[in-house]
Image (cartoon, rainbow, N blue to C red; front, top):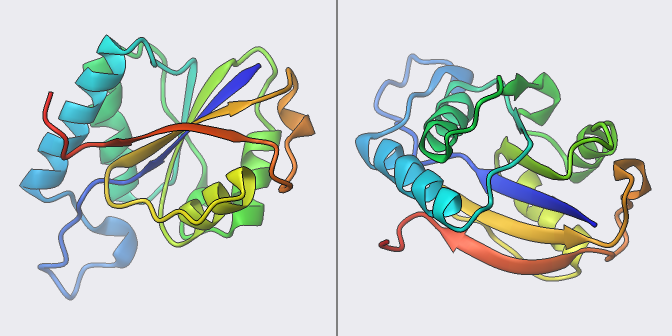
Length: 163
């Protein structure tokens, strides 16, 4: 059994129109939401064995803040394929994960992340900023993951929910 955690980046700023989309920073609210979510996941015992993030600043910072609050000890893997990616891109990233990893967190962007969740769990899903979907997968090899509805959505964690 594998666990997949799909995290949409926290609230990002659009204040500087000259800034490239990849370089948008987190808003103060986004920073606090990421920290709050990390604490909640730590308390719930949902610390991933691997975190893979989009290379965009807002995703990297979200991953970093969540990881710090969870006491995640490893380096966060950055994957440019997760920046504004399709459900197929997400699928290929997850399928390439080592089977030694039992709980993997993917940090990315909409619409692709929500579309990926919808296809995996055969539901209509729209992740808000800093929402995390906790998914159970009924196999032991990441390469077995397909886009057919084989996943079970356990819970959607909302960072805005108070501890």
